[in-house]
Image (cartoon, rainbow, N blue to C red):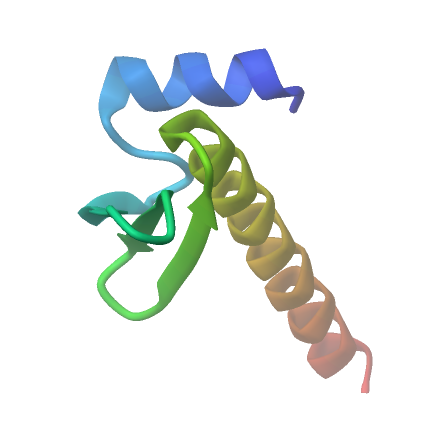
Amino acid sequence: MNTAQSFRKYYQTDRYKGFYKVKERFGQFSRTTVLIFSNGKKNIYASGMYTEEAMFKAFKAIDRYYAEKKRSDNELVEA
């Protein structure tokens, strides 16, 4: 899924692959935005200069989380 599709999916449903935004903070001195996404079990933290940059990093982390989860599930099945 490319970046535009990720943003479109999030803005349409307020969720991305089961994760939703829990908190958004802007640090005045550090000039960064910190986002926390959760699916109820796992929290994903991401930061960036702009909200979109932080969201892009969070989406990549969520994709990585599901890829690792899928890989570990496949290893359990094959064993």
